[in-house]
Image (tube, rainbow, N blue to C red; front, side):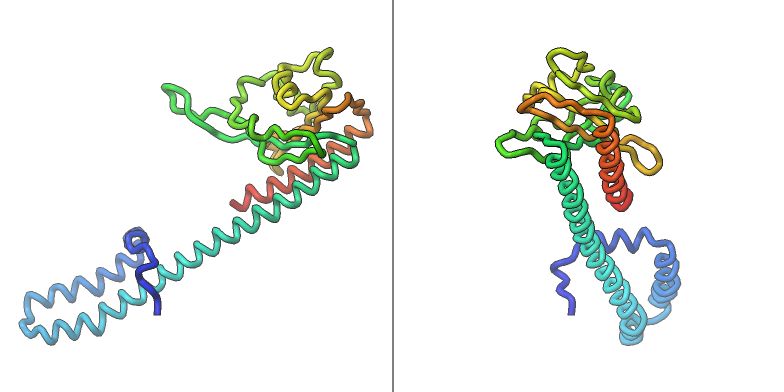
Amino acid sequence: MYSFKTYNFNLIRKQIMDNPILNIFLALIIAPSLLLFDYLTDYDIITGILTVFIAPLLIIIVNYYIERIKKNKKSKKDKLDDLLTNSDLIHTELNSILDEFNADRVWIAQFHNGAYYYPSNKSIKKFSIFYEESAHSVSKISSFIQGIPCSLYSRALANILTDDGLYIEDYKENDNYGLGSIGDTGGAKSSTYFPLYSFDQKPIGFLCVDWVKKKAKVDTDDTELLKNKSYRIAGYLTNYLDNL
């Protein structure tokens, strides 16, 4: 037996009302039964009709939607499991970058919507750090880089989203494309950024590798290796986002 106290019958009622096939089926059963009230005075007959035809039908319908609700709850749990599995794969990639390139911090920012322009009500494009790993004694910056409007870093993003990304050898001496404030947030001396694209070539974010303790020289071979890792990370992100 089901415990009816644990289910949202308003949701069940809405799902029934939104289903045209069920509406037709119910009309074919209930409408003739209601017409009988005009002609029958024997309430035992009316009760019998309700008991034989309508009550079992309602039980079947309610049980069907209870199962659907239970299935949806399970689906949400599956999505959480997918998120945790996918996140573990991404953090493994970030840690491998830390080790292979003697980096101090690696993070991934993803583009998303947030708030709206006045008066058009069109969504403002922003980016936030969703994944981050750092070396021992190096602070993380994800809590500071959340909901940043893309318009603040339009020149930097235009360069980051190119095939080779953007490399800043020294935030103090080189043109940092307006990224100095992000570099200062985590005390980075050098950084390299790579774009993250979905399978259909839509930008979904970018990868950043920071060197905090000392400046780093990123040569052509390093760039190619990091590009390959960024492709793999973009694949993980795309697979997860496509299955939401």
